[in-house]
Amino acid sequence: MILYNITVILEETIETEWREWVTNAFIPNALSSNLLVSHRLLKVIDSPNEGVTYCMQFIADHLESYNQFMNNHAAALLSTHTQQFQNRAVFFSTVMEFIN
Image 1 (cartoon, rainbow, N blue to C red):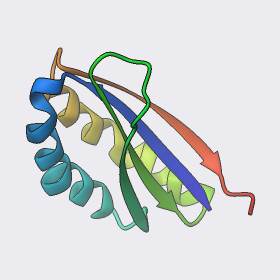
Image 2: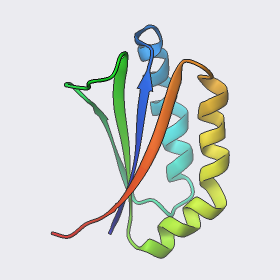
Image 3: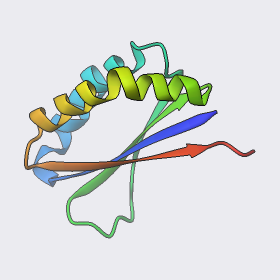
Image 4: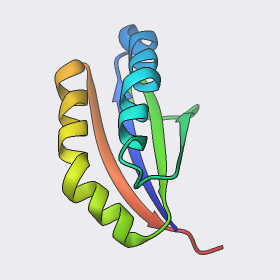
């Protein structure tokens, strides 16, 4: 199984707006690809960054599913995030493989 993690650092002033948008638009759109099987939304409580930090985690059953998601869906999805919160949020992603 593969974990696709998107860490987002955002201005405190947009936290409520961002959470509503991510919950109602971003996450459902990501899952609608049927390549990601589950998700989690987490808030980092001890972030060294200014602002507020969240992690969106998505699970793919196989590396092939993750690669297909990245090749066919990720760019457009992440572009909507950038457009929606331009200059008020930054993000980076990491990909991990489950060991245990």
